[in-house]
Image (tube, rainbow, N blue to C red; front, side, top):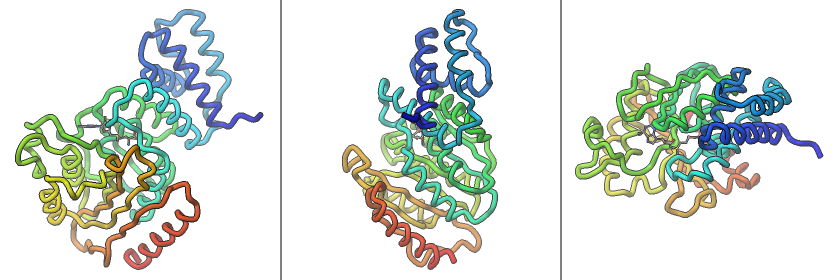
Length: 327
Ligand code: SAM
């Protein structure tokens, strides 16, 4: 039986990570970042390995030539090994953005962004899966920036980007602290949802809660808007109940002042554990000179993304919306 390229890469990442995990007594995800870095540098970088381990790793690395694989094969295989590692160590707000959502965001970025080259920010980049899915599907010249608070996830994002040869500028910091970056024309983010523990930092935001902790997803929207050029687009994965919470009136006000709602695409609930964790893609545009609201926002309830017929009919509805609203 022929082994697919993704399976070949999965086996390589998995087996070498297991070897390193044991030798370095670290977590699987840390070992995965180490093996990815070895593959990218074309050398075994860990100094404390036994002769036997060195030999075993060398043999595995020599069997595979990364240049023969497409970016999407590398990304998918890396996604699968990360998923395996995350099962060992589940953290609900750290979940990777699934393929299907990334591709949809990629399609939207491609359709909304008219310019041939632009800057793109993901302020909660995690493992880089969403960002690199978008980079692999948008055929434009993109300079990208990622921010992530978790040091293991950002290492994985760094290795992920390197292996796919995407030059991404990465910042390991709290995305709600000041960001030292030039403004961007587009933002994508699968927003961390829930309360932001740092009330002092939240003071800096118009969207801080009147009492108690603020919603980090609200603060992330405001932070992203600060770093977007007038007329720039923002694509966020948000909870379906975004506009129904007790802090929603403030968010409404903020949006009215600064942004235009271009669209809201509700993802199929079957993609999520339950109705309460279901999400939508919110598309916003920052106000600016000459920026016009659409005649009507693009409002869509997506069918199961695996239903080809359902997706076809929705995609033609979306295309029709573009013709009527975006010329
Ligand atoms: N799109 C990412 C991917 O494909 O891997 C997943 C994003 S995940 C839903 C949300 C991310 O936000 C997590 O990686 C989490 O560590 C990060 N995060 C949470 N609070 C943060 C903060 N204050 N600053 C920066 N990143 C933060």
